[in-house]
Amino acid sequence: MGPWVRVLVVLVAVVGGVLTGSGPAGAAPEGRPGAGEGWLRLAHLSPDTPTVDVSVGPVGGGDAVVTADALAYGTVTDPRPLPAGSYAVALRAAGAGPRTPALLSVAVDVPVGGVRTVAVTGSFDDLRLDVLAGDAAPPPADRVRVRVVAAAAGAPSLDVTAGGVPVATGLAFARTSDWAEVPAGTTALQVTSDGTPGEVPVDLAAGSAWSLVVLDRPGGGLTVRPVLEAAGASVVPVGGVAAGGTATDGTADGGTAPVALADPGAGPGVAVPLRLRIPGIAVDAPLDPVGLDGGGTLVPPGAAGRAGWYTGAPAPGAVGPAVVTGHVDSAAGPAVFWRLRELAPGDEVLVDRADGSTVRFTVTATARVPKAAFPTAEVYGPVPGAVLRLVTCGGPLDRAVGSYPDNVVVTAVAAP
Image (cartoon, rainbow, N blue to C red; front, top):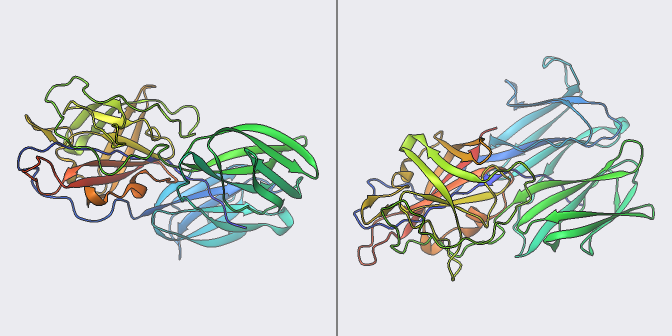
């Protein structure tokens, strides 16, 4: 049986550029988009174990970098971005101080770009801390990857189907099924324990991965809690960002009609993005909805001073890669992402939303990649956290065609 994990939100901002001058001075370093970080989450999946305190810190001692106080049965925390490396996880009775000897402990290696879940599992008499690896492999188009986490002591054996596709057969308590691919969209989830079936509808967006956590329900029976493990773009664009010389120097919206908004399954409370602010490079621009051209290429807004949010990907602040596009320059001079290549680790990026909230991201990496070999899977693929990728044109200007051969990709992660 495979391990399980729930994944974070990623915001991906991708920007195309129309370059007619010599281009911005300097260049982003060549390399791959991404960051030297991974994600870690905590879960309490032991039905008869009371609330516990869990802390995560450096191996060998030091201050905790993640804490979860009074962690109760059925709780799965949001994944936290952490520098890749080794960590020590300690479990204590709820209310015990950090100097109290741990009841259980385990070491966990958090890989670059990966996610690990440390789960309190089993019965109280056989309690353990399991390190569960995630799997964010992108599913085929119009499909979803799902697995079942058996965390109900009242269900010694589980059979689960989703949309008629078997996901788990005879799954024992405190075990996890392998991944299965099922059709995206609203589907019927059928859970059978000891011959007693139950059915609930679930809405699973294309390009996402889910853990279906089966829990004991207070008073008897079972509860199924869908946990979003990773989300990607529901419609993946072809190649790099379009830079066909269409930017204007005005502020009117001249972009193409976007594709239909695809809900990545982040749930309620994820508001529409309205504005992008990057204080370090003096960006303060409206965000317009944008989509694909007839060939499937992502098209930025027509106006040089505006940025665009790709509606075929998750919204900023939701799990998965949100996508923002914009030009690097126009015939009139620098455009919204002219200075994007200057961003460095630690710089702040802010997205203002329609509900008045602001999502804050921290830059972790900047890279330059050829448009001819654009890393589509890395930019649009499923991720376990809220990430931001800002992409614009880069490299030496090709005056013959009036564009740049590369994209500059800036990766940022949502602040905890």
